[in-house]
Amino acid sequence: MSHESLLDELNERSREVFRRVVEAYLETGEPVGSRTLTRALSEKLSAATVRNVMQDLEYLGLLDSPHVSAGRLPSQLGLRLFVDGMMEVDAVDPQDRAIIDQTLGTDEPDTNVLLDRVSTALSTITRGASLVLMPKREAPIRHIEFVSLGADRALVVLVFADGHVENRIFTPPPGQTPSSMREAGNFLNAMAEGRTLSELRNEVVQQIEARRAELDVMAAELVQSGIALWDQESSDPRLIVRGRSNLLASEIADLDRVRVLFDDLERKRDIVEFLELAEQGDGVRIFIGSENKLFSLSGSALVVSPYMNADRKIVGAVGVIGPTRLNYGRIVPIVDYTAQLVGRVLSGRKG
Image (cartoon, rainbow, N blue to C red):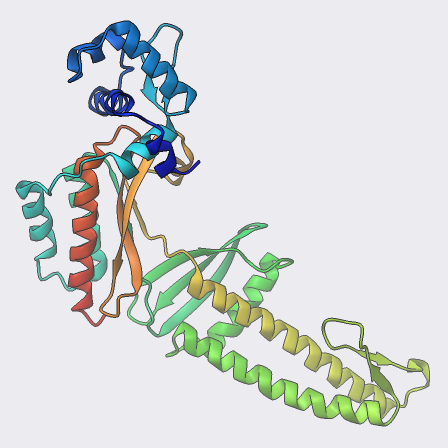
C-alpha cells in the first residue's frame, strides 16, 4: 500500500492521535502513553478510546510497542509517512540562515576548504553529523591508481595536476584481480599527463580501433590462406587454427602476432571499462562526525539534498545524519537551503 493510500485509511481522529505520538516522540525520544495523549488531543477522548486508536495504528504498521503495557513509538514506516505526508516544515531560522550565509559568503578560493566549512556549520546548527559529497572534477590527471577492496568493491585514487586528490568507490568488472588493476593503472599513468579522465578514455578507444583494424587485416589473410577460421559460436571473435603442428615458422609468427593483438584488445577493453566506472563512481569525500556504518543502522536517519551546477546537473550533495527522532521540520529546510546556496556559489566558479 502506498503512503498516500495508507494516509487515506486514517480518519481525522486517527490522524491526530498518530501525529501527536510522532511529535511527542521526536521531542522526547520516549514512548507515548494513552493518558499523556488524552490531555493533548483537541477532541476530548477517554484513555481507553485512545488506546484502541493506537492499537489500530499499530496494526497498520505505523506504531510500535517496545514493551507490553508501555506507550507507543512511531515505526520506520510511520516516520516515513509522517515526513512525506503530514510534517509541517518550518522556515529556516534567521540565526541559522545567517550562519550559513556567512560560511558561504567568504572569498575562500579553495572549494574543498569552503565545503569543509559548510559541513562544520551544518554540524553546529543541527547538532548532528553532517555529510558533504564533493563535486567531481573534470581536470587533467597526474596519477591514477586502482585498489581492490574486495570481490565487488574497488577504489580509484585520482591525483589531479593541481595536487587535488579524490577517491571514488566503484564495482569492478567480474573477474578482475588486484594485479590486473595495477596493470591498468600503470598503462594509464604512461599516458595520463595533461589528460582528463574522459580524454584518457577516448585515447584508449582510439588505440582499440587502430588495433582492431590491424587485427582484421591479419586475420583475413590467415582465413584466406586456410590456416585458420572464425569461431562463429563464440560471443567474442576467436580464430581456430588448423593443423598447428604442420605450420611453417613464418605462419606461426603471424599467429603469434594475432594472439598478441587479441590480448592487447581485451586488456584495453577492460581499461576503458575501468575508466567509465571511475567516472561514474561515488565521489565520497567528507564524512564529519560519523562513520560509514552509521548508514546501515536502523536507528539512524539521513536528510540529504543534492546541489547543482550552472547547467542544472547534480554534482554533489549535503546532508545531516542523526537519530531517527531528528527534528525533521527544522532540519529539512536547513539542508535544502544550504544545498541551494552551495549550488549558486559553486556555479559562479570555474574550478
